[in-house]
Amino acid sequence: MNFPLRESAYTPGILLGIGLMAAVDEIIFHQLLAWHHFYDGATPVIGLLSDGILHAAELLALVGGFFLLLEQRHLKSGIPVKTWAGFFLGAGGFQLFDGLINHKLLKLHQIRYGVDLLPYDIAWNATAAALLLIGIFLLRKARRGD
Image (cartoon, rainbow, N blue to C red; front, side, top):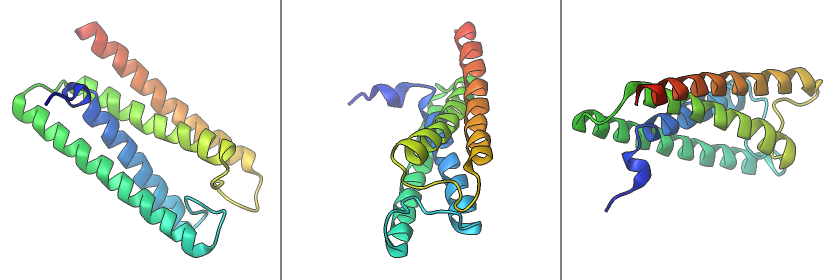
């Protein structure tokens, strides 16, 4: 059975970018700094449970991305610049989705509580934009090479 995303040279990178950015968010902001949980609108137990679900999803993305990357390497079908483009697009896309949708639209959590959020929001979304710009640059480079 053919899966179009499986055949794309971008897919492993996208999954790895999403998984790594989710891991950075979850490990640094949820665990080490304890600034928030994935869902802060309920009890601390539910917040911790939501972090566990996020952690499971990030691990699935990382494992899936690594298996697809290994398969492409084995078949010699991967193109490194496309994988890197996918990585930065996935990481930036996750970051931007988290910053705009999870933080602002759905209000699942904020980056931090009890502080002026504007500098945090700017840094969070500027990081997302920088990652996306790198991904777009690499995407254009990959397309010129095709």
